[in-house]
Length: 496
Image (cartoon, rainbow, N blue to C red):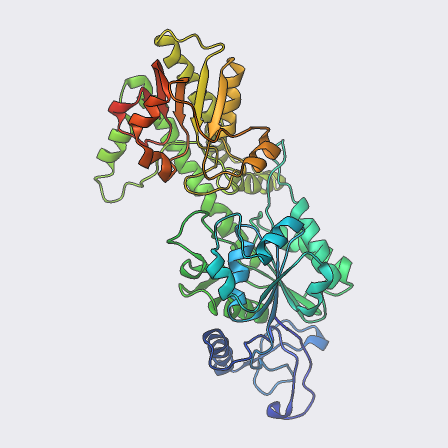
C-alpha cells in the first residue's frame, strides 16, 4: 500500500525538507519499472510548477512552487492494501505485488488458505503468476492492514431481491478500512456504484470510524474495475484505466499509481462522480444493446427467420454493432444498470429505456424454457416427468463464475413444468452450485437418457465434444435447444 502523508513546509528551502506526501509510494529498487514510472509522474507534476496543498490552512488548491505547501516528493516505501480478493481484487493485488509491498485481505478464510498455497479458485491468476508477486502477502486479519497507508477496496456490489443496490459489502469494507486508516491515508474504490456513492456513503463511514477529516487528514480515489472474467487476452495491465481523486493532488497520485502497472495507460476523470458514472454506463450500454438484439430474436422467431443469419448479414456494414442474443447474468451487465436507475429515481427521474431493457433481458429465461416445452410438445414428448440435461451453469463461457447466472432461472422454469433437470458444467464448482442454488451437478451425463438437451453456455469443452455426442446422450425422439449458437442451425431443433 501506499504511504501518503501531508505536512506544511514552514520557511525552509524545499530541498531541506523531508515532507510527508500524498502517496509516498515507490519500490525500494530504483531500477525497477514501477518506481521509474511513479518518479516520472512526480517530475511531470513538478515541471508544471506545482507543490502539494497547504493542509493546515485547509486549502485544497494546487500551490505554485515557492508557496507554503508540501512538495510532491519521490515516492518510496510503498505499502498497498487490497480489500477483497475475488475476480477483481486478486489480479490487482498480484500486479501491485510484483513491484510494491502489498497486503491482500479477505474475510473468507478458505480463500486466504488457498491463495497462500498458490491456488486461485477463480482461475483468473495462475500459480506461476501468484509466485511472481513476491511482495504480496495474504491475510484475514484486519490488523495486518495497519502497515498500509493506501487501501484499495474491490468488494462486490450486488442487488437485493427487489433489484435495489445492496451496499452491505461496500459499507462493511469501508467500516473495516476506517478502523485502520491513518493520517495522510488514501482509500481507492474500484467497486461499481452509482454516481455520488463514494463521497455520500463511503466517506462518512471512513470519517466516523477513523476520527479523521476528509480531504484534510485522508483522501479518496475512484478507479473502476474493468476485469472481464475468463478473458485471457484483455488483462488488467492491457485495459486502459479510468482514475479520479477527491482533490487534484489525490487524483494525480491515484493516476500515477495505476500508471505504474497498467501498460495501456490511464484516463484521468475530472471528478469521482464522473468516474463512477463512466463505469456504470459501460455495462448499461451493453445491457440495452443486448436487450435490443434479444427483442429482435423474439420477432424473428415469429417470422421464421434465423437470428444469427440476420445478424451476419447486417454485420456486413462497417458500423453495425456485433451484439448477440442470450441470457444476461453475471455480476456486471445484469446488475449495474439498477445502480444507475436507483440514483435516477432518487433524484426524481424515471428512466424508461434502461428499465425496459432490464425487464426484457430478465424475461429471457422464461421465454427460453417456454420454447423448449413447445418443441417437446410438437415432437409428442410428454413434458411432465421428462428428463432434460442442461450444459453449463456459469454466467459465461470458459469461466467458473456462477454469480447471478440466468441459466438457473431456465432450470427453475423447466422444473415448474415438471421436467427433471440435470446440469453438467466442467467449469463450475459443485459445492458452490449446491450452496448457492441447491443444484447438484452431474459429472457424467448418461447416454440415451434425456428427452431434451439445452446448450446454455458455450464452454470450449462442449464445442469440442460436438453436436453428435450431445445427440447421443438423448433418446431417439428428443429436442436440442442451443441458446448460444454453439452448433449449426441445421443440427439443432431451436435456438435464440
